[in-house]
Image 1: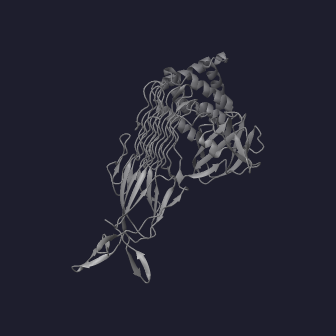
Image 2 (image 1 turned 90 degrees about the vertical axis):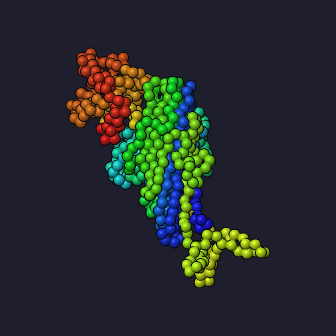
Image 3 (image 1 turned 45 degrees about the horizontal axis):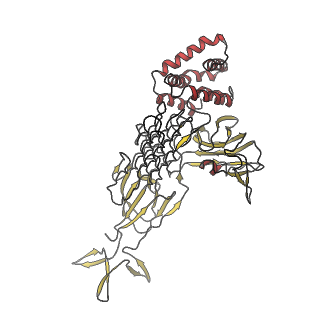
Length: 592
């Protein structure tokens, strides 16, 4: 009908808002599509194809003063052919109310820091990176950070080239990546805490290519470190990054997943079109898996997509899981130089209408009104997906009426006779109290855009704790040692490097590692609650790890070491990798 007004909305990187002022109880119908997932990067075998976005249709009424918000989901980025643990596809952004608690660009400290840029850094380090004003080679800053609520916060960091992040005097993690990011979930109590960043031996990836802004011009610099802290409740409908390619050799990174497209009425979510999953990165063996992946979805209120698993050794990374009403889970990485699993799509939702979820690369709901072109599609291997889309119908709106046969009939179209011919009138006005007001076919909704409720805050992968640096999936006991001061971060990182080199992607090594994750959580970590237990655990762990690594050890420790190693192997033979990873993550999240 002529008095139905349609507003189409593409991806803008913002939340788009409208305060309604055109009458009461006006019917509205909206059509939403989520962002498509990116394809995985290539190796000898191709990366997997990303998944299409989901579809939702919703019907509701709107009245004067109601606020309508639309957040169109972004597309997942492509996985690249990467080496040294890089190549992950970026996450598609989406509606997010999670608080940004801290970042190094805006955090107040004395002496002052300067922003840094380098063409060889990743986007995160170039966005938030800082260094000393006087270009000292050592960076050591403490920040007072206010955490609004007790809960889980995500620490994200990058550095050129080594940094340690601590809170209230306890080291949390170390990080060594300049092109990617390292993420660590940390449970924090509400209140003000001291966050300290120490970075040393900063060596640029390409010497003399870094610069900092001194207030008037860009000058050379010799290092950069970046940290953000996000959390404090809220909801996220964003997609997730893919997993990095393996740290040795060259393989494909997993594709990033799409963000969900979300419609809210008076800040209540009434429709969600889920984002598509990212394709798995390619390896030397089987291809990266095409989306959707096999790991399904979390349960609402978990709406953010989950990062794909980073690959250790050589092989493709896992694809990211899409944002949605139920956030999609990320893909895992099988053993050997093989392709990674794809991520799963995020589910769609409608408070009053229909939904469709994708089955492959094509967008769901491609047969619906307003769909055209290649919207919300998954990317082929090594290519990004396409962004989401929305179309909103307002009306029928109140227009002009004529009295015919004793009743008033609404006028769909108005005509005026010009030079003997009837010509369609695009806009009709009526004079009310001396003011001409437009009626039929004249309303064009104007949306206000805001970046405040839009961004990325993905869930961490099950199988790792970030991109490079300490905190990998083989270090449950050594991480606890480092957190309690029994071991140094250097000792922990040395063991991680050995674990990744000697255990990952080998049949017996993976069996040992699974058992280590489970037995370490269930049996070894409780010993650290007492002083005698700490003494025994350190003696046993020191000698056991020295023995398996071919270093000198106390001969009387052999029976004890054999007992623990046997327990690792027996348990690892009967549990799954996913269960073992969950045991480790649960321990880390509980601060054990």
